[in-house]
View 1 (cartoon, rainbow, N blue to C red):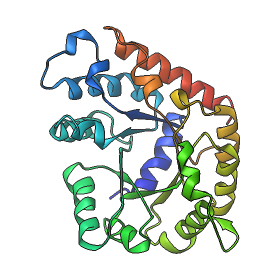
View 2: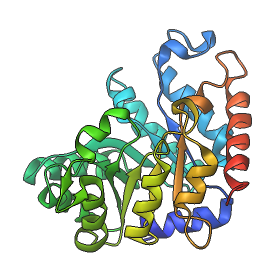
View 3: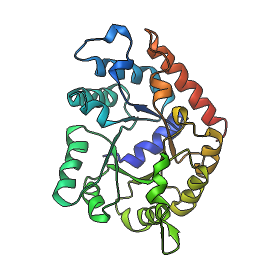
View 4: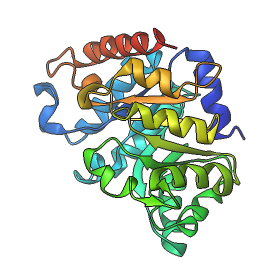
Length: 271
């Protein structure tokens, strides 16, 4: 079985891209042709995936956008479609789960057995026993929130413990104590390039999922220069709304493809 890290490394090399396309479907933003369709979320996301796959190294569906519309079955179908039609492009389920013991085990089964995700985002606030059940799924990726892109992240992530901000403590724990599976990554927001650089220094070549470019305004050049590894990879730079809603008309898929290509090329200009 090919692991998440192996799949991701191969995708970086094969595609020449660090772009992760986020899938945050909101039916009110869909083109009129999809209005009222029971499968609209799947149809929209499938078209976006097929159009942007040539320019992406991965996809990141956000589970809340599916669950809020009772569309978990469409999420299952979407991930199956990605695996079938675009093999080798890993799927990261953005769920940000965080719980302990048997509850975390059930969340892990949901992500990896039901939805067949290759990796999932998790919240480390409850400590290692909330991370450990995810690691039991061999070959699956676990991407830990570290320095998030939202302004309020500083409320907790910059609290000092033993003289270090909490996000640096999380980064060090993830790299040194928690990564028994070798499949861990970290979420670090593009809105904070100095912190990306700090985290990179702490964790070596561990992959970083970096949201915050596009609609959130993160600087692409600063992000790439702060987070790249020695071979010019190491990052999944996520863009969601700026790509999937590049057009709200019938050309939405073509517009998404163009936006993805332009984003990939902009990222690559600084690698």
